Length: 79
Picture 1 (spheres, rainbow, N blue to C red):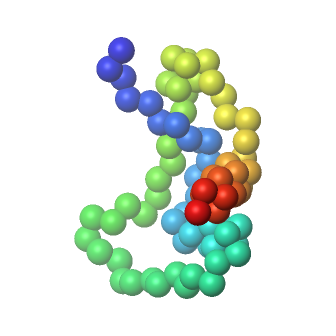
Picture 2 (spheres, rainbow, N blue to C red; picture 1 turned 90 degrees about the horizontal axis):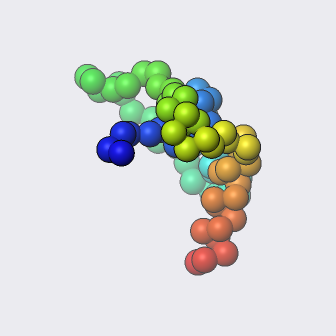
Picture 3 (tube, rainbow, N blue to C red; picture 1 turned 135 degrees about the horizontal axis):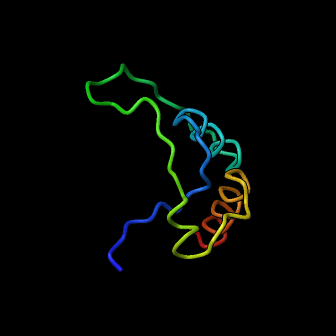
């Protein structure tokens, strides 16, 4: 129907926390490189999933961490 939907858990998380969690779950040795703030950077963001629930009747059942773990496991298996 041409509507844009956010496919998300409706949970706010910082990019730094998200990156740290991915590194942890992937047992990675990657390092987060922090740089100075740039003009126009988004400081806070949170996807709203009400439209997804209304149109698709879908409510997320997994937490962000559970979803990340499943995604990482999938890609590690496909390597």
